[in-house]
Structure formats: C-alpha cells, structure tokens
Amino acid sequence: MATITELKSALRETLEARGVLGQLKARIRAEVFSALDDQSTPRPPLSHENLLINELIREYLEFNKYRYSASVLTAESGQPEVPLDREFMANELNVAEDSSAKAVPLLYGLLHHFLSSKEEHKGKLFLRGSATVTSQEPHAHRNADS
Image 1 (cartoon, rainbow, N blue to C red):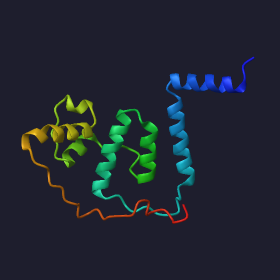
Image 2: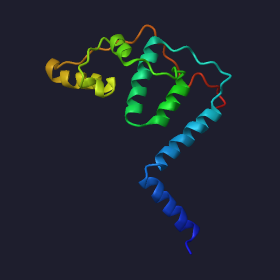
Image 3: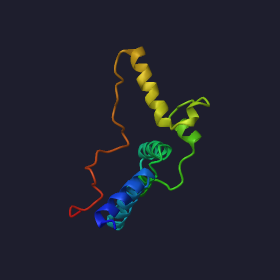
Image 4: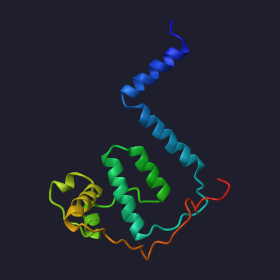
C-alpha cells in the first residue's frame, strides 16, 4: 500500500506532466488576490497610456497562454474585460502591420523594431516622461495596513 507521501508525489508528478499544476497555482494566486483586494478603495481612472500599455501586456499574456496572469492584470488594473480591437491599438500606436505581424502580439513587433533599428542608428532613443502619467508610489491605492 502506498504511503501518503508517495501519493502526494505521484499526484504532483501527474499534475506537472499534464501542465495543470502551474495553472492551479496561478488560479489560487488570482483567487487570493481577489479575496484580499479592497474593493471599497476606488482606483484612479486609467490614463490613455495605461490603457494601451495594459492591453499590450494582456495581448502578450493571452498569446503565451498566461490566462490567469491576464485575469489578475485585468482585475487589478481596472482594464475593460473586453480586449481592445487590434486595429484600434495599431492605429493608436501609429503602427502599420503586414499579415505575418498580425499573427503575434503587437509587443513582439514593437520589440523587433527597436532591436533591429539598434544597428541602423547606432545611438540610443531619447525617451521623455508622459505629461499625462503622474508618478505614484507602488500600490498607492491600497491602505497602509495591507
């Protein structure tokens, strides 16, 4: 007869082999976050930049099958449940795409652009802070007791 330790080990191995263990852990984290999230404290409204950034990240997470991470991002950020239209995103970012680029998240195309243009320009791109995004302390929307 198998011991409890052997059963636990066999169950863990089976869940890992099926790719379920990671999903279960992510789902538990998402549920714990949801239970601990203070819904009474209003979140600041999403700026246009944050809406676009969150959508780029969500598209990347979902493409890579990080569904629970995407659900936590959506819940925590206040991002709309329905993803923004890809064409809308491309227009907002002033990006033109060919058909092969549409097969992967926009973030991959943006990264590819900057990595490939590094050789062409030999210089660094100068970034400026956005006038519409203010600096915030991490987790400023939560109270000090959490």
